[in-house]
Length: 324
Image 1 (tube, helix red, strand yellow):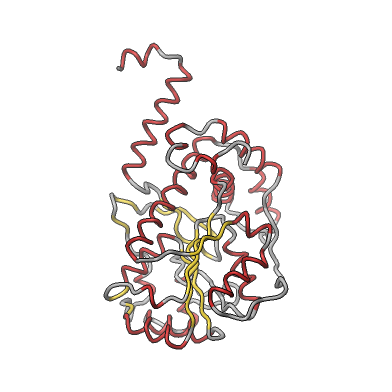
Image 2: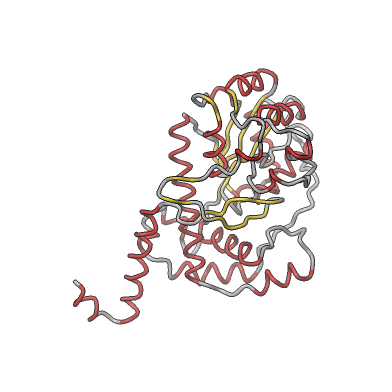
């Protein structure tokens, strides 16, 4: 087999080596994790050893990091609770802002963002534990729930969800939640491009308008291997979510970034209907704009042509289509 490989053209051999390397990466499972988002910004963290992942939330609650089932059960008795599970670069910040500004859907913030939760910085008017003077996770949950208009929302990445579940004393009861949603993109190639450009530059949102932030974003160069790593990461995120949903008995309502862009009011109305909340009739104000540009489109077109077959066959091929 080795001798045969050396007879192959150099280009073909390079592709084979790349696919073998990708197969090894998949066996490791989440070899690299994009975790904390401070003010919704991602940073890199090496977390994985096999299937083990350090819980980065516990230390935010030095008095007590055990979340009691009774806390969640009582919260569900006085408020309609919902969770939006999300993958990165899927419009979650925009959804948070619109839901908050609707006045009827609470504030589905990343309340357990393991970067922001250690800070003393408000985000969209939301306060982390330190600013509240809270060191017990149960008191933090109570404060979040009681801020809402009888409705309280939470956004969770797959890693935040896994860490939070680990902190709950006893089995998870899906009846605590009035509704669950799953926000992601159909177009995985475009999502990988968006994630790569933001991670490489540190610019994640349109309100980051400082000249140095814009310049850093525009200066990022095309990197096929970098894009491929983030595509693989996104696929792993979705696989982890599938496992999580099965283990917790959840069937979240799918929400897609592409639909959200076309009809944001319709998505808000769908969430409200599922919660039995007052339906928003007008799109709330927003301070955010799209960051996607001609470079994003050009990179996607270039990237999708070279994605290895091994990766293509691991997801619905329509999600990596050149014409999507």
